[in-house]
Structure formats: structure tokens, C-alpha cells
Image (cartoon, rainbow, N blue to C red; front, side):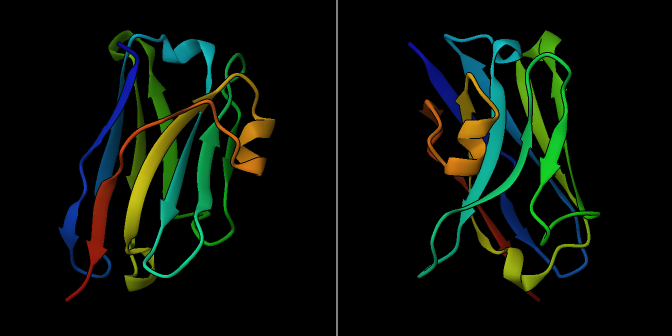
Length: 123
């Protein structure tokens, strides 16, 4: 069964860090571009970061550039999102998603989605 499962969310104070994981079963993540998205209450879903297949190029939304880092561990079939210097406005449900082409991240039209993990940044 094809699944993407996010983990690592939780409650963190402003300025703190979290590392999200996206583990896959039923598909080999190395064959896909993997994106992280988030959706805050009352807001539209937005793309946070993406890592391509092949050359592993990385892309970030301006709001997280310099604070978040996306990476892959192909041996573990897992993609990570390291989030540092977290702000209250980073509070959202974070989703990972897979697509064959990096262009899908820009459009939000990814092929496979996880169910999300909640990140709350609050003092």
C-alpha cells in the first residue's frame, strides 16, 4: 500500500526547532520530487519547500528561506524538513507530498499526499 507518513510535529516555543520526517512505503522517494506544504487555520495551503529527484535541487518559500532545510536519506526512504528559528506564524499542519516533476510543487498538484503533522509555535 502506497503511503506517505509525516512525523515530528509538536508544540515548540518561538525560536525553537523541530525536524519533520516524511517516510514512504510502497514507493521509492528517490524517484520523486518531494515537497512540504503547510496549511494554517483559515488560510490556503502553501508550498514550503521541495527537493527534486536526480540532482536534488532544493527550493524554499521566501517566508522560510534561511530557517528551514529540506534533505533526503534515500537509504531510509525518508525526506526531512529541519525547521529552525520557528515563529508563531509557522503554526500549521505540515504535509509532505510526492510528484514526478518539480513543477507540480509550484502548482500544488502533487501525485501523493500524507495526512499531515501539526506544528504549533507558541509560548
